[in-house]
Length: 606
Ligand code: M6R
Image (cartoon, rainbow, N blue to C red; front, side):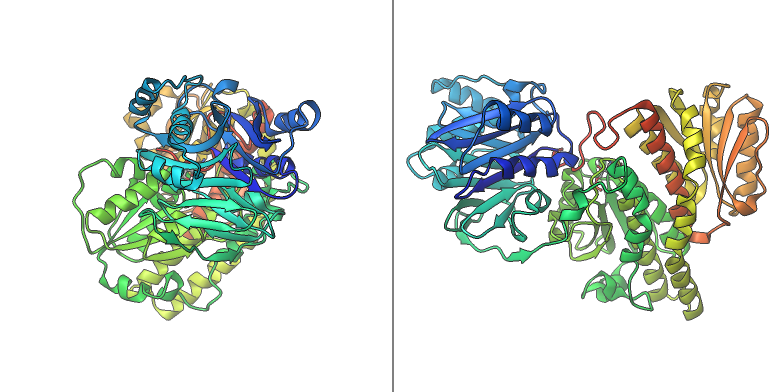
């Protein structure tokens, strides 16, 4: 999604702004731009290519330089990704503005502003904000932005400069993230603290409705009621390494291989599964609840689907899993004794945050976030939180965030099971031992990469694929299919294998590869029958089989042998070869793996 950087300094900040954009590239974008006040005039450079192209323009072609500026990566919502829609957007060569989000009432505002003589040169919703601020400016940009945002409906984070205020950037946020970076005699704004790694490690996280002014001297914030506000300045470090690729070809590959470390960091240090892992109030909350409602999107939704099996089989607690963008708009029956669990890598996904707020508005008082970003809006919005320690995930395709979410959800299931008397001390110790051995088991799965590369050469020539799983591994099949379509653009669908004969079997021919997740669990014999249904129609099976399943390669069946069955935690092992298959197939097809077409990392608009 769109990324924002802003800076006020006593040095040329163009390199800082462009470096910030480079660090935000992972969010996904289709154009980018930078504007600075240069000799009292706003000047800009914009590109519909990559940030590297923008860098080339500002360094070699225009030699853009200035001490106050804003920059942007745009993920198109209103208006095609062409130069005249790229931000910064100007109003009458006086105001320059960047925006992340969607302004829902932009058409009405555009008509009103046209009536005042403003000409629109882009198809963006953003242009109305720039003209609105220009039309309302009376010498104080901070006050103008406070007044102007009162007229905006929708979600936004903005940063704006005005030619008459040479050392000022004003920002505002409502529904989209914006952080303040506090420096020495210089200050910054950004969508994500990661953008400012190397410039500062001190950050203030703005609240919904805040308007902020940064100058050389300091930071001034007004809250949604227009009252002066203080936001705690926190030191946030360890961001730098995340944007370095090291020996890997892509961030996705790096992140797949980081999973043993990420899971080790997410497994609790303590020797028991206790409620306080989820927050001070968790013991009280967990003893009150009678069910769980999980809300999430995409890959995070699939981790929720997997967790349903654990929560119902281990903790015997009824669990419902809903796609956040559906839940937020459907009429549902709230149960105040249900724990609402939101799962998110970023903690900024607009649909999941809206679903959480919707649940709260319906009377759900107990909420838990499972999230990878401690400072995110989601973590601030819930009563309880459990942080995954995946580290920054750059690749748009989620990998280590998924397996750390599964780890966290397994800890939740065992913790609830223990409180509810379904897990005794011996079983608890066994679960803990299995969790702690998981990183080593994952390393043995990662060692399968050469065999997976061989398969990927064949997959790269396909246009369709089916993924099969059963029970706890059905959501893993869904995740495998999502990974493949997301980065290789091969159409892939996943089914619970028992559903094949109810429709999708019609698709099976010699041309259809059928990826099968085959753990040695209670459903193995059923799965083997489903595999025969595929073979009988000439379908080619690609099976990830536990070593103890006795499934062997034969005509039309290729097998990659996984470690022996890993019990309840098996889904965490089985998803990894599917991630690698998607990754290497995408590489073989030559797609932009880390930034697949049309997608963004952090989906901060509806
Ligand atoms: O940050 P979140 O976990 O809330 O993001 C949810 C989805 O947008 C995300 O998982 C998406 O499906 C990934 N690109 C999948 O790889």
